[in-house]
Length: 182
Image (cartoon, rainbow, N blue to C red; front, top):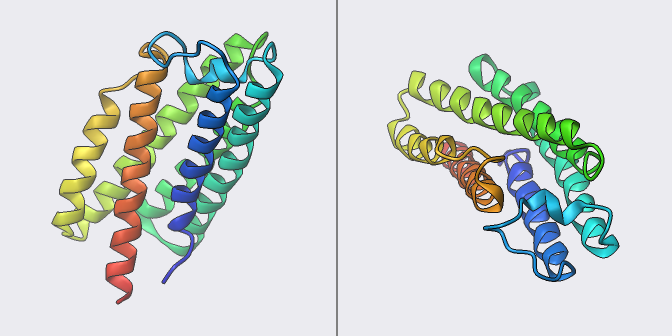
């Protein structure tokens, strides 16, 4: 079985761990009132350490998974891998762009969102071209859920939905590769 499809799943697990531990150290943090990135503000050292560390590590892992996809596959899947690399670099950068760097933070958030959606759309189009309809149906449902969120305006709730959709899409990709390798 190919190992690189597991890296985006691992990336999301690391990110969620950073969010959960960061939230434990942020008294009063609420996903309906704050963005996930508020966990990374430098006013709360322990919260920011875990959240930003989670961004750095998960961004590197996601970029590595994207490199694996870009190098191992062709066509639209190669471009999906490149999009994952860019999204991973954005996630890594997000760990640095908190507090006084609001404009950079917002731009980075949009980069992550746009290129995560692009990766999902490109890989789904590739699966459609291969007539892998069961994967296409699941991927389209997940892609629609992700498109219904806009991470900055919906605060932590929207960000969590987008990240959950991307994690679910990654699991569908792992299933696809596992099924095709058998």
